[in-house]
Length: 208
Image (cartoon, rainbow, N blue to C red):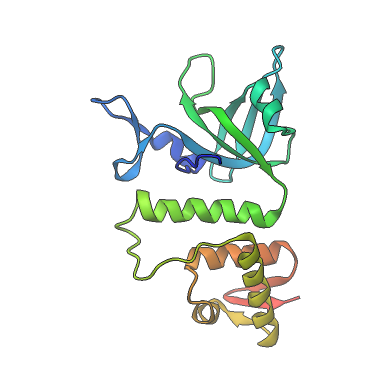
């Protein structure tokens, strides 16, 4: 079973600080980051003469460089090409010969289903709320852990509700689906808009 490392949005790589006493990397709330997980769409790929891979990924918040060894690429059975969504776990590398924000991959996998990409982002947002910024997001009830199946079911339920009401305001959607956070609902609605299932006019979401 693969170990899960703390997720970091790429824009926050610049916020990592080195503890003067331990030499470890720290992020918000003094969380120690030995290994981390990043994700995004591959925007650049270069194979070295040794068969290793230098890739750049973009998660819409920033861009980072990733080094993937030939051995890891072969054992993971992944094809690295532009446009693919990848999830990478590894450690930060600081070297004058590489870009400032470079991660040396120890695990890499691709996600081809849009719903899986959404789940990766939701898991990262949940980690931020629980571990990095818990004071900003006090939890009054246990959060539901989404899975591919129940998230897809929720997308269908939201679409059905919007169609049934011939359009719904976001406040009404929040009231109807109160077990999900505002951030989760915005992601769900964004996914439905990407699939041309709904469109938005001001604060009202309409079915297509």
